[in-house]
Image (cartoon, each protein chain N blue to C red):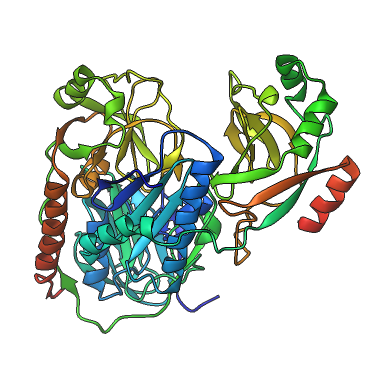
Length: 323
Length: 231
């Protein structure tokens, strides 16, 4: 056992270690995995001065409650998250935490990540990173395939979470992260099997809204309220899949594939959500309405680079703060 | 060979080799896959993230932040003129399967549907020189073909919620082996004690896209012995 670790007093709903995911394993049936919200992931590591791809803890809805059993460490939470820090030195008085800034935790302190507010996914990172058994150089857990850190499992109640090193002398940092775009228009590009659908159906896809169903997770987001039918058989010979693909199964309720998608799939794909908007879609909770707007690949690419540049600008706003 | 290079996302191309599912088309996919794989394994100059062969398509997943799309398009368009003949040694793997009643959950139904008796089904399965079209759906699961046409059966009307690991299933001209427990709609005719995916091994999968596979029949006693060794 290392000298620095947390104990898990409550695991949360879907709490896993994640980084940018797996490369070059998809042809063996191993999906890419990785963080859902790359912007929040990158921001957490930037704030902490970590390597860009240092694994963090991703949580959804309710996060974990952790007690720092041994060691001192700086942490940060990114997202739209309600959390409380209770310090041993203050007799465990609850202090409401702020996202997008680092905190110093000391041995005995407790951090309770109560819930994400008007979003789904949030991130908990710490200076120097977690001590993990990586698989194929990735620190991403694929729960369905039981692959990756933590024996391929979600973080469990009562387990210990070790981290790499102690930190307490570094200056505390904060960053001004803009509120995420909450509009419900999701931009897509034409899917590889758009021709499987009639012109009328394609119009229906773009002109009538869908509702995000309860069946939405790291594998895919099922949409209902606007059934889409293909004019041909609802199956194609299975082919490789990427995240963002909007596949339409026989029941007509499209599924937007997310980071833990199956590696191949045999449903026709009417559209592909652009990377820039996939994060936005994933952060919308069930019951919300969304509608799709078609853009060109060039527009999608420009938005991707724009987002990347914006993020680099935001990172320039990191500054010290005094507690 | 490659009919079209379609960009399907900011981070992916889908190479189209045709619409039919034939071994010939799939061999072209796999030769191209092997060619690109080798490049990725060397030093990955193009910054590719994944290359996924399937029946008649090849998905190329790249990193858009490298901003080398033009170079990629030139590369993909140039593949036609390059020697993509598989210089990779095609591996031939023998997989032991036990067709004992306890494991062959659907063999009676397959027999009814095809009007072929169980022994002949097993013999036909044993005499097939299988070819791995692709691996996917779950880690290490091979889609193999081609079964003789008289053995072709549709999917189960109601998929099983839990197919035991190692189960050998058939649908149409294809045969799969489930590496792990999973839901599934294939007609189960036997089970292998061999692990098709072992994350603790450096090469986690037993098979590759393009592998040749022969099935050999084992008794339940042998099944249990091999299973014990593999644990």
